[in-house]
Image: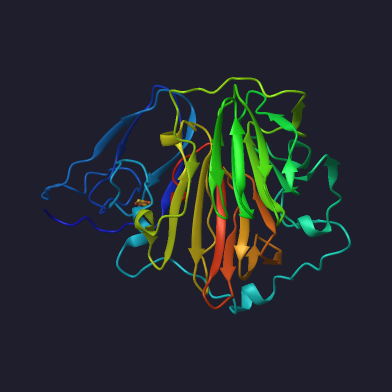
Length: 351
Ligand code: FES
């Protein structure tokens, strides 16, 4: 098999129109990327026809090594030459100021992108549960919301999924999550999925408090509490917990990630992954999905067009769709992150 020419080491963003046909260049030789100009003549490559069913944003593959032609599947990150990094000490990057946190929890970067530090937030309380919103529609999120929660020893109030896909991530502690008539043991770094029709309750046997993040999509301004646990458990989706498993890790050059919760658990809209970023700064890029990053371990710097902010374990970053950004890790051993993307199921697709 001949190897295609790498036209561009990322995806091409394009707004396709319903009913229109697009001929994607598969050889990489076209001068009208990402589309065919006939330059494949005499090679064994043929263009790939795509007919758009609706008006939508897509990312056509630019590297020509995708497994899902004509669209990017993230394969460009593992091309020879590695992941595209950026120099944090370039003259342009040195001119970007670092934001200084004030007393509040939110540090605004460009557009609706921000860093939220739960340690500076005011928590609401109900019984053994304390929580605060970290990402919400009121702060510009269109597709997801997120809450930071602490559960002291005992049983927290029942929380309704409220017709939303809900994904939990346990940062510290261990206990159980009850969904309808089922109970799931969870521990540090467990992910857990709750169906839209269900409700859940967190039980902490102690002695340490549990700390976790609760994400849902579509987003909501607050958690919705119930007096009692309804019996609903959608048994056709029995597998709800996801744990870190090094054998499931996928490489993105020297970076790596593991999908925790996705459609295999029944979550058709929200995808949760855990990843490690070695000391480096990614080339600025964009995604078509809305994303939340939870920083678990290490220290880093997050960059947008004209601002940057330092982040450390416990902080959260919110990225609107199409926001130009870059995450820099500055810690030996790298920066461990958990990402929640909506809508989407592949965190390595970018442009
Ligand atoms: S640009 Fe080819 S897989 Fe992303």
